[in-house]
Length: 289
Image (tube, rainbow, N blue to C red):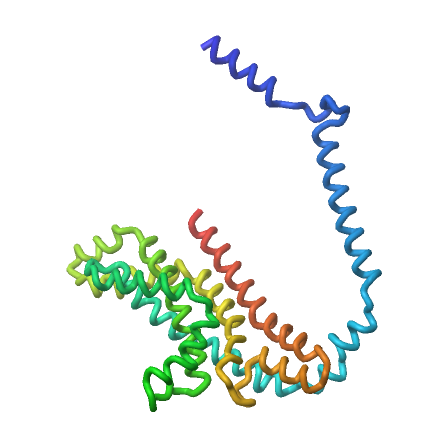
């Protein structure tokens, strides 16, 4: 016991450094930390002053924040660009959510061919760039099935391309949510006489979706941004989403302000969704305590 107490006292003497005792360099640890923090603030302030001082604000305001050009975009950027972006995102999210649930259940199935298919699908569509999936849907599907049109035109093609990619990501998210539900929940349901299907539908899957609401919200934000790739599908003027809308008008007017306004419209969608996801994550953390 005496030997143990002596060892503890030695460790305290080695690790503890009183705030007022100077280090070998002549400064206390607290003082060194204050100087380091002050230096970082100073560097940040110098960078900000240099950027603000060296930038040509007049040219930037004329070409990137031209109020007259910005006013001319309304209300079309809302009624056409923002509306189509929301439609493409909603269709892609719906397809991804339904497809993700099916693929996740196949991934968890005890039947090997189902698991093989689900694993292959997830690995392929998570590994391919989204642009290739858009090209495949817009060009490959009409060639593979002549005379067959995807319902909904550009909205259907965009939703299908976004949904195919989202299915792979959401399948893994949903699978993780199902596996996070305690196995006792399923066993208790089966002991009450429920079939496996009914227990999954009534007990496990609702709890899994409650768990994965924050990552699903983040996936919705990503889909909103990915909808900008719709321009590769050869859409019409009335089918333009925000990026295509801003780029076309920027070319017509020789000014970059429409692209900046389109970016602000994206932020009006994505920032509230990101804040919602953080709030849901915080609520889940409080619920687990």
